[in-house]
Length: 414
Image 1 (tube, rainbow, N blue to C red):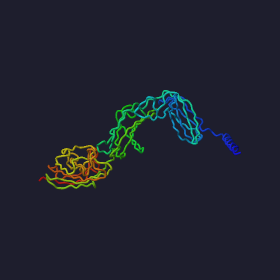
Image 2: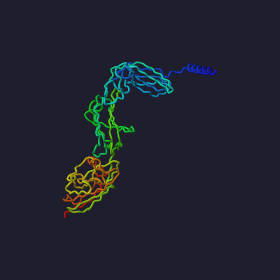
Image 3: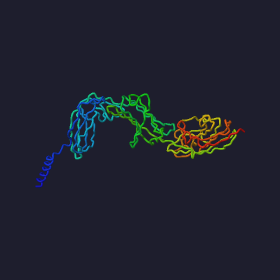
Image 4: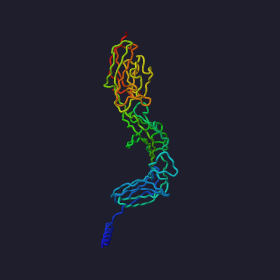
């Protein structure tokens, strides 16, 4: 009796579903036109795929060639029931694949199907296991199958320190593009997935055209931005052509000692004495430099405590102007050049630490700087102002660090 009752229940359920006329999971599936030529000429470049989904399901759209190889256009994508048919344009481009015997230095993420006849398959699968597949034929002809190849990809230097110290402040990325493209981009990707765009250097090769391209990156520091933090990065170069094919190539890059340098003469003050002197006397100053940034500040000599003669400059003491270094300078009204007397912003091994062969003032530290100038010749006038400055050579003398704390000094002949 129990078995008979159960059979009746099942029969009743089946009759109810039939009577209710439950609609198919997937219906009204079309792909049109049945012949496409994906070459970006504006004629039959794409086919429209339409389908009606009557219950929530995961939809996949694939293509199979005559040899049974499958190509994915849409992997299982969750979609909900919809009153209107779903529609998507198929440009002949599927997920990246390699042809037999291909050995290339870049990776393909999107690639056009080669000419041929394909069987398209649209499959809908519900969470409870119901699955329906509908198929049809598609012919691809006159496809633009030439890839937007990237070769000659290089990143130099591999260790990059964007901090305006004149040492490895910029990274150069070179590549050769083998066809005109819709888009060519280069960027750094950190471990959290954050992109940092790398701009292209303007050269003879126009943007997005076949040829040699160079990308130059300073971490944004020259525009006043804070550079990306220290760490390991992956550098990507990506190209997308007019058909929709995409390729990319990668390399690695390490950022060290990154940071925007910010330093000041503490409180904008300098001690200068004596303020009255005669020829052969020595004028001396004392001030403090504060590094208010999280990066190291490179410096060089002459070192604090050095004494100049008034007819000398820093070149005479064996230290030429050097891109990226910070130095304290002393200047005066009738000087023939900007800040002729210069000193390092600390003492090696005392205030400064050595990185490689260079000396640096550590982040968030201070250093006292002293120096002297022996007056050995009479200036054009008796009374003139002396002032200090903090010079970031070949970069800038910030307004706050220029002409700091002028002192009126009188110089007399004996």
